Length: 454
Image (cartoon, rainbow, N blue to C red; front, side):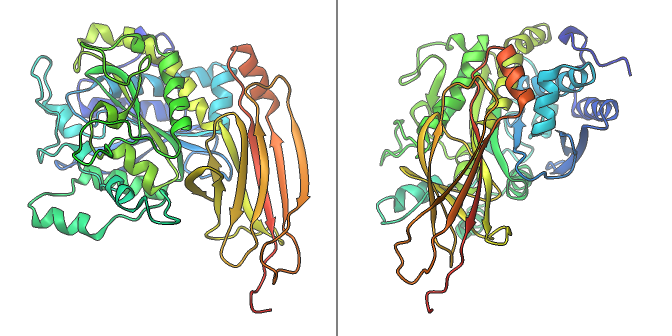
């Protein structure tokens, strides 16, 4: 099919949800070996929430292969994000087929999910030059304010000993209070929540318009009166690194719209310092293993069509660099002595009160980290891990150590096995493009089961 081109001026754009779906289906047909489309649900008016996935094994979760998602058009009157994600899908397909090594490496080692439009009903009624028409869904619900408020749960419990900020359940009152107050959980919101729960996403970005900024959690202010205030997560350094990855590669975020925002640093800002809400970004972080940032692409919420190609050129490298950021940090399993995965195991990093479950990817900044794996009925295993800022060579190191157990009833020490590995092709490609090369650590932890009663 000759319709798909790497030249952005020859790639297709959509004027309606049906055209958007047609483009995704064409891309799937063109690259059937590495892509597939699937629906996560339907909008209020029955339009499909269609995702296109790129992977070496579409439709299949590969152990230790990270999954990431990109979401556009949460607000229907901000269509630029959806159009850029359509361009991205076509670009990934075309470049893979034409032998682009960087794109081939990315798709062969990452499962990428793209939802161009979370709010197709709003997109259908949005009109250029007509303000907020189409911002909300067909039920007049702002989807970004429709997610469970888990951040308030964190703030209420943050002084409790041992309280953490991960895998917080959805409160029952989210469903009951919505009904009693006459509010609804939008079908679009519900579909995305199920999606987040069903796929082990590591990284995510949601795309908006109306400013030039990349924001990161928390989105909800910790100020007792809700005033805008810097409100960092335990992973503040990681989120700043992720936000910087996009902002520094994107020429469009070089200047803010209107007056400078208090707290912004060269196109990056803490969400609660910018405008306090509890939205999808906080929900991802507090309910799942997924780290999400919000990208505001430009001052004009509904730019004219002739500016779309320029926006693609501004954001193309930033999109690819952000997907590559999925591979920063550590990955692995937590296994018992027989090599079987341990259900319910947790991976903790000293100084960060936010655990990850396995099989896991743990996004981290360069530096030295103390990593601990634990599970009920098993001895803890701890290891010091060094993530260098740069690497020049392919590196694989196996480390075996014994750790002492604090519990006197445990008769033997756990054995921690870690492999630090960078695929050779990834090393060459990243050096070729002059990007930082971050270390991937494959942590396979063999833990000895013990019985406290023995």
